[in-house]
Image (tube, rainbow, N blue to C red; front, side, top):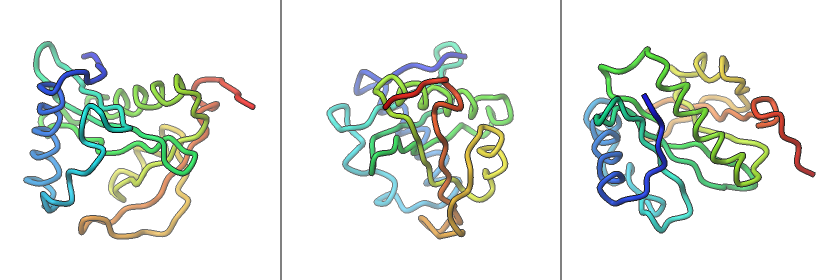
Length: 152
């Protein structure tokens, strides 16, 4: 398995297919809520794919939001879950953010994934809220905990 930065429209379209499979088809997110202004190669977001050989099995993106690196749209095809791919996605997004000088990250985690994010060092900092009909919580983490970086 390898994590790659999306650099072509074909790769981005592949990420969209994974997101459609997971968020729209599996979880019932309205299609008009799934895609936004950050879903282009020119947007202020970096997207990644997880490849198993030539087959894309997971995706995610990050962008700067309110002084944080915000991790978003993290998903894995159902048949590839529970294999460490989620960890790989989060770590790659954190690495990309750290490389841009970002020192803290946040995400809207689905409640069912809260324990997973806790294991990666994230702390829950909100009550449960609804996003696209799914219960979420706001979670935050200092990247120095992962990368040993300190920026002043």
